[in-house]
Length: 117
Image 1: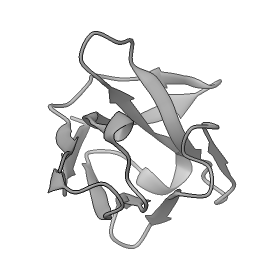
Image 2: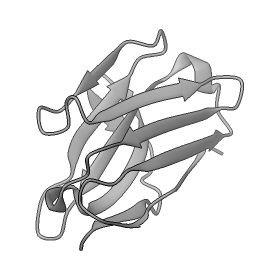
Image 3: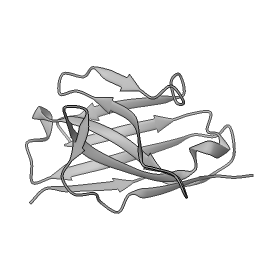
Image 4: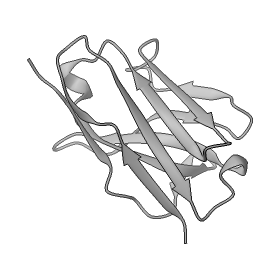
């Protein structure tokens, strides 16, 4: 069965950086578009960044220029490099397969990112 396991979250000060990882198993990782989503307390889940199977990327306006999504198909892993973190980046971050701009599959546990001084 398909498993997506997020890791790399933590507590960071404003302006700091984190790198999230999403390890995939039970699927042909390289053929899927992948996305990083986040959900802050009291808010709806939102798409932060996505990467196609061919490596094309898109970003939410709120993270453009600060976050970078990438993938390593040899390791079945997607990444989200987050720089210049802000308080409003605090959320649980999830990775998902993406189809027709929509997430599909089961949500994992995610990884908590907390930006605080």
